[in-house]
Image 1 (tube, helix red, strand yellow):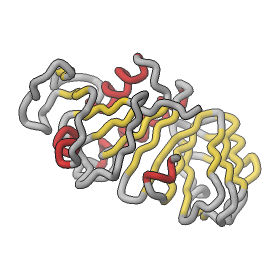
Image 2 (tube, one colour):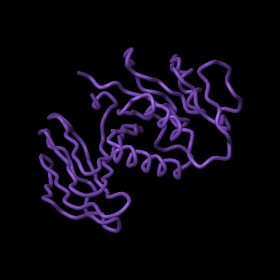
Image 3 (cartoon, one colour):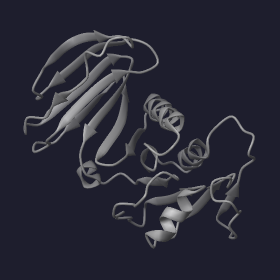
Length: 212
């Protein structure tokens, strides 16, 4: 059975890829992400934000207005609302790149936090996808191409294993000040990345459809 997906659109994407939304899925526009949805002809189920990026508070019963001064980002609030509705799989557009690299880093933390909560979060950029695993694994189907890199997040990642890639690792420990996990590559075989204790960010090249 396919797991329902929550799509969250942030302000960074110049153009959205095709979103194949099913009735069980949820589409949220986070602040300026509403402009990206409108340009793509998409109608969000929810619109969340303080709307400093959008420039005005949109009208509608599906609008959740947040204060400008708050501890979390608009994207984080959108994800929390979706988690409260029972969603455990998230695809975020506009979460990478743009003018605010600090927001990209904040979204790395968001993906890591989701992984710790038993969720899977994918940050989709321009042909780059970032996800996180915590005390678990991520499997890639055969046929994947391009680079893949892993980095510990929030401390040391212990027992890191990489199988089916150009370079293998077997229960290695990765620290935040070491770039050992950068620039591995898919070989076309099915691949597996796992961590026994800790959190890993996984960066890989691919199209949005590769998530399915």
